[in-house]
Length: 338
Ligand code: PEP
Ligand code: MN
Image 1: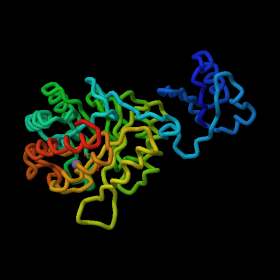
Image 2: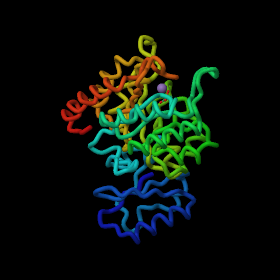
Image 3: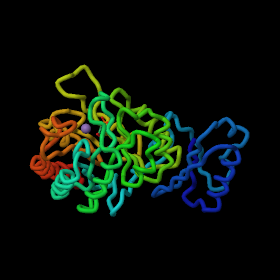
């Protein structure tokens, strides 16, 4: 349920309503928009039959939210969410934020070399997994804390912010210490304990769409995070399973404007996992920018043939740099910046 307040509602009136909502055993979430303040009411709404909220001073109207997701919906918050990820960088504004780096953190020197190159090309965030969700238990599983320390060194050397994956709730404190953005991988999109754990964190979260999940399921997973109090969530389209097997997954470009219309949260596109082929990363990135994404997550490796994971979809720094130049033109055409 949404309580839409009158434009002249006072703070005292807002506090009075939220107190009342809490007394009824419901959770109020206040969203201050440009024009209006809205209070989202979460919980068993039946009690509101005994206590109608329309009668409170400052209330204009009370509306049900018809979607199963509440806090992530556009009904709850009309304007786009802008997430401050650190160093003055915002995701969800006019600037499209590019996150780039290797699939896995492998070696400190190599990571710093790649970091410097992606930074020079215009990336603002360095990606790299220290905990890797691999299909085979015999594949490289990531360097763990050692990898996180390498990321910290790369951050110190370049000023790039860090996005890295959290796979296990027990590692939250460790990952929080090093990450500016905590990534929840596609395979963990419905790991509800992990979602609740990152929901209690103060760090921004990059939530990747499960490869066999619908947009609605992605939004429901995001709802888990927001309902724990963390509103700094980015949703990532990274390709879904279809019958097509020329590409690793199928980039669901429809998901970008669909999510933007259903939710106020920023949308990131990962063209690397979506295609699985480095030669398609450029065209997929351009399509994503044209479709209105707020950020890109791109795998870059200076020696893809030696990469511990996902070399076939990794761009060499020179190609990444050339792509960034082309993306700037596309961004300009849709009134954005890179
Ligand atoms: C990744 O970004 O490194 C990754 C494993 O992606 P996904 O969870 O989308 O497969
Ligand atoms: Mn990868």
